[in-house]
Image (cartoon, rainbow over all chains, first blue to last red; front, side, top):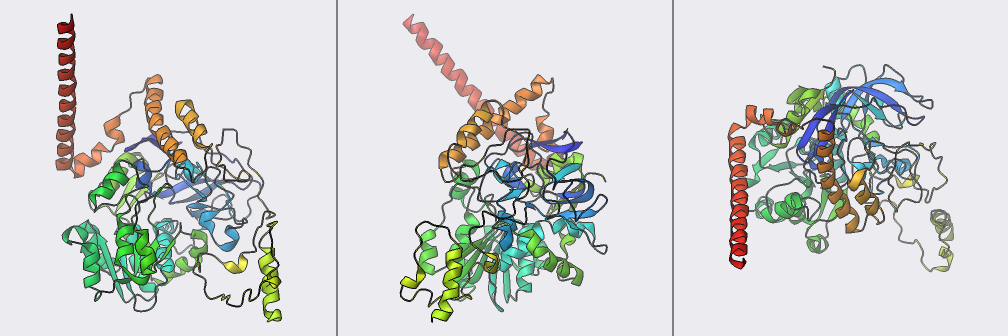
Length: 381
Length: 187
């Protein structure tokens, strides 16, 4: 079969790889119908995540048709069109039982901090991902969900990561009616976090980014008040001034380790890898939030460490909440939101490309070319 | 008070199997300020389903992988299901095996893995060449997208790269020239 093939930082190609097979009684093999490139794939693409091995296939946002199931699979069957959460979760362990499906203890041998994730380095379990014609899906009774008849598969594929991650960013922020919410990053997750902030009763939603076309999109889509941080002298001072000196009630970091906006952070984090990514939005969030406020982090950082003003966290009495999205826990609520028209995920899709354009798709997404917000690969298009 | 605290004490005791357990009943005021609503983890964690240590959970059947799986030393046992994407091999594989002697909290673990990733890139090129395949690096880096949508950026990057390369070659040539001159003098 054809699959995306990682060859090193900034280098990917399409290669022939062996067909995935059932390796465990609870496995399924899925024929991919849509597979997105996620902002967090760019951390892999840029060589920032340790134990990203040459030959691996990325892709943790995908849906597809079940081709084959293992002997213990009961809830899905060949022919079902399923959306597959990016978390690989057993549904039984200490953490899954508490709804922490992103922290499953039975799916990642290489690390304990995070559960298994499709196509996300060996630090996240060493599973090949869905930027391929076929993919192995472990615990097929737990994660995959049959796409409702009425749902557009373009909406379904975005429910596997970007929508729940944006939603959980707003959920973890504990937004109260009337709160001022700041979202750092107008990528797909930031766009969705801004949109979902309204669902929790925000009174004012502000988004910072450096790309005007993305700010234009989120201004219309969320809708949000938007600012290009390159045109602002000091983001923190700006935020204080626009909130009567108090700061925002809630700040959301929807960027993670690939952030720009501070040379020292960018150099030490993104380029020299002395930090686990450049923690610029986290820095801004901690300093822009009001005393006693909440910082919600869904931006992805590496596992080592980052320069952040932890002293200010203490002095300001800030609550920091963070996690990988627990997709399975959130899916029923989010499907209801799509059905009622509260959110329109597929509106974020700007590019639809065949699988053999994977290298160009990565470049386009990474360099923000051609107004790219969300590219979707269609393997069997 | 006893009626109120006793069940919670039982719950608290049930959540651990520590050999150093203290009977909460012996601690004056144990649990009097406990407040279920003060739960900063909600809704990420459902505490009503946190029954403490659950090593006896109904574990899934264990996968029998046919490739080498490296395992974090923080795991008490191998997770039931594992990924088999790209088993460790070559020099990078040796580095990865070494990295897994240390825990996830040790910087060395991650630095070795990052180093192995870079070595692995070279191994990937060697593997291509061994299969009589010359990697099309411009295509792999998405040059078609750059030509289509970012001609100016591509041109700038090409000029800067060529400039740095020329500078490096120039510096090496100058040093070699000096080195030869010096040895001529000695001779």
